[in-house]
Image (cartoon, rainbow, N blue to C red):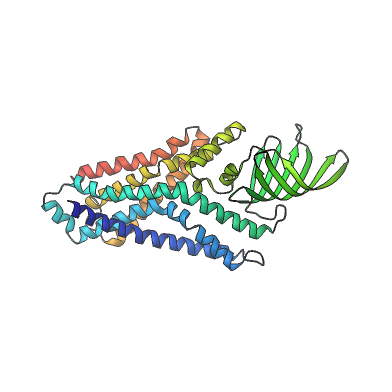
Length: 353
């Protein structure tokens, strides 16, 4: 039985790898075309290539569930086309035993997804976004469209780029009073974090004093803020590119500031439940092979897998905003498509048995 498990795992993992290579490769080509339109004297061709290379882990993580579904359909489909599954059944191997053999490589894929999402993607994505923002901003206030905005009490903050290790570039701050009138604005070229807070450098401040303004300059200025390098590394990238621990800590921080944290909670539960989503999609793929897609061509299986995978992803993407509007929890929005896939897979397998 160990030889059979290894053979099935080899077929499934090989197909998943090929599908993942094709999908990620196409996605990088499309993003390369998009990024070349932003090339200028600061953001050069080599910067584009560096940015794309750093984004590979996040693309692998995003497309792993779809690749698991389509790869399982292709791998098991090849076994079915060569009558190898028929031989296994004739030898007395049950469908449940074959399902167990396929779930072992699926478990490996789920573990790889967790490692990528927790330890690799947050680091590489922050480096990618920071390097691009630094190249495009050239140290000027609000120059980079890829910087981040944040609100803290009555202060609105824009940061052009955040480097790993606690260094920030292009810090613009707007301060308002309780009547929502701007009382001050400032721009700092850079800043470093210490135990006492942020130490900003090359600061230019403007005070709004009724009918006149006053400009001040300082080589250094201390800035007390609840934003730490850890929290900044969270807000500089998209929620789905953050670690599970980072999402939870930043959601708690937003709650303390009285801000909406549903977007980050949705990403948190999506990442926590992604292994379950991979298992559910693989189960659907297995049920298709023993059911409606048993005798169709490889191309038809790929099309069916892509359709199911896209429906799964779109349903999660639609239920996320709907959870905010209707009022149910992000956990439920993430879990509903997974539960539906599990029920559908078990139902089809039961019919095929």
